[in-house]
Picture 1 (cartoon, rainbow over the protein chains, first blue to last red):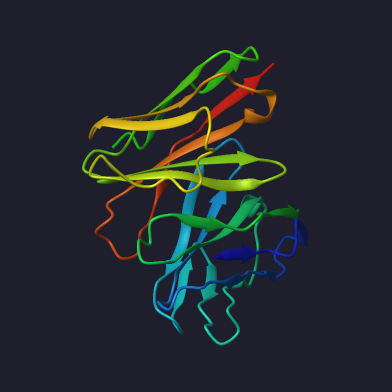
Picture 2 (spheres, rainbow over the protein chains, first blue to last red):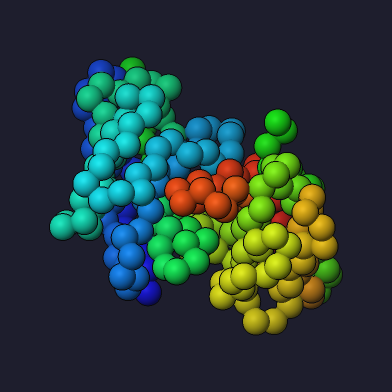
Length: 115
Length: 115
């Protein structure tokens, strides 16, 4: 079946330092999946951070970037300089299959930014 | 736009009681999704409606769980004879569906606690 793996449950970074949160996916679909990063800020609901629906393309939002790499089946989230306000839980998600309806989520990575 | 509305935000039931969770999707969205989030299992897909018709219920437990969408403005998730293992945050999401990116907008969730 389809699945998403986030290897880090928690990442701690000092403010202004760079960040990478790893995400790899697996799918049995012959069609390229859609890939998403969702974020949940403290006390708020789950919201879309960025999405990429074409292999090889890069998505960006709020200083975050992620490139859809079909060769390595990865969609890592990166930011050059994090801020304390980026502290949140980040979820990588995959939409695949003929219906492209359901999303498969990774376990989530909690980012803690130290001022 | 009020976003996806879920009621109640918190619900406490005794073991064996019934729980009904409500979701109002964003106006104009044709697809509605239900997910469940627990610490152990993470975010799990339950079921999905498109234009009020059930499309995919592969994530629904076979017993005690049912979902309906009687009109385009609301969907319900009903859990009969609730058990402690049903305790979770239940999330509803909606999307335009015709957008290939399949971006889903999530509600704040209903936290169900079964005593």
